[in-house]
Image 1: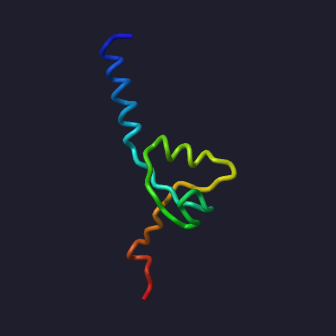
Image 2: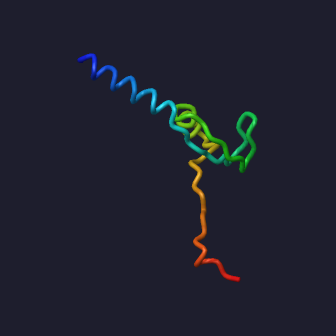
Image 3: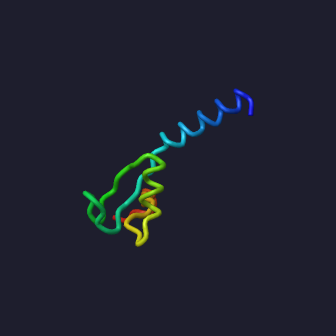
Length: 71
């Protein structure tokens, strides 16, 4: 593998580690309670999401379009 290819792989690995993932806890886990939302680095979030039984799931914002709101 060329030096440039090695550097590219290293940069991609660093970028993946910097990626933040927001998760919502669906069960108590360490210092987090059911319903807590927290952000973690990619690898840490991946490990938490892989736990069985599941203690968390990927967080999705339920945004409501202003046209859908009724008064």
